[in-house]
Image (tube, rainbow, N blue to C red; front, top):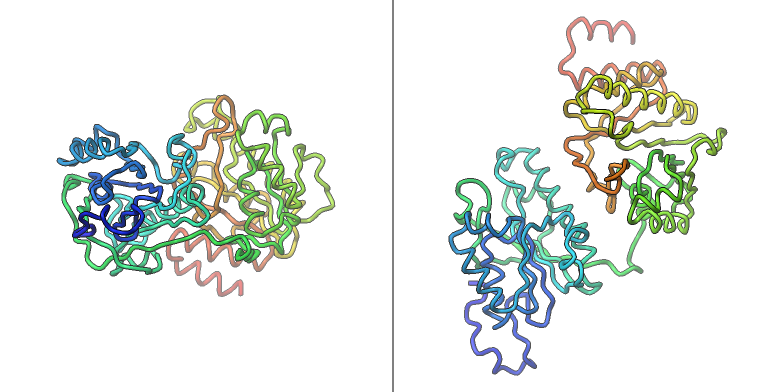
Length: 439
């Protein structure tokens, strides 16, 4: 067992420091994603106290007691030992949503066997693996804001196939507590740990940070125009990755005063962008018309709330008109050669009814690529509703894509035909024959 054999440790000559594997009673420890809280209790018993431990679960107290037969007793014992127990904690937003959690800077943050749940499909399916990766990515982003500069983030994970596809680097082996499935009808059952490791991560010191000048499909060599920014977190994500924002022009429909009023972090984000050299514009009519951009980005365009259900045809037409005018204007401002217009948009119904690709084609633009989008690809990005009274609230991104358009040229027409049919399915014999004639 993990803590087996730790007895009378207070009699040992360690200045009252009690150690259990990687952990000791002098560390401020945050545990997330606990099942029946048996791992937290293991540490608490070893230390003889849990006053240095904050243990959290995604489940509510009621859900825990229904799912795990020992949860009630474990939690009660932890609380008797001085543990801070918090339920309903989402690892993606724990640094923002939970006052008690974010009030402490931790020496160790532990997530044992992260898992997105058992309802996505087989563990070998690429979509299932992606969902697991999303859980871990979101955890890392949130944990980074809560861990001390010299602290560590620990993720315990299986290292056999297909779990190696999650791409968590092996640093050490750890096992020996009562793990739980946590999902489905067998939630209180253990699962085979097999060959597993605890991966330990630290923040890089500032002097070791290397700005590679690239984040996903964007680089510091591109002149980038961002429109429709909410609290400017997307612009800031790029700027931090680049180490500078001199190549960015970030714009919003809101005035500076409205941003500071509507978004909790709006003022601080804009000030940081300004320090990094970003051109910030709150009235797009003031943007220099002679400027030509390599990339123009509009994330989650929306005509505003209050017009009705997203399913209503008239509401969809309002959204389409917004996108149509954006594309018309952007086409004049994007470079002819290698310039791209990017629209990130939900792809599920009813958002698919906006017909983004069709709108672009009507404006002489050609779809060259559709990339899967996740906000966790852009550290620090927080999408916003942008419409009162919940303008500072995020909305579920769900299944989304970044649609990449270029000005239409003959070679782009050819590329678009092939790419469009690839999305729809295998081309017909007649289509292939026409392609050969065109060539």
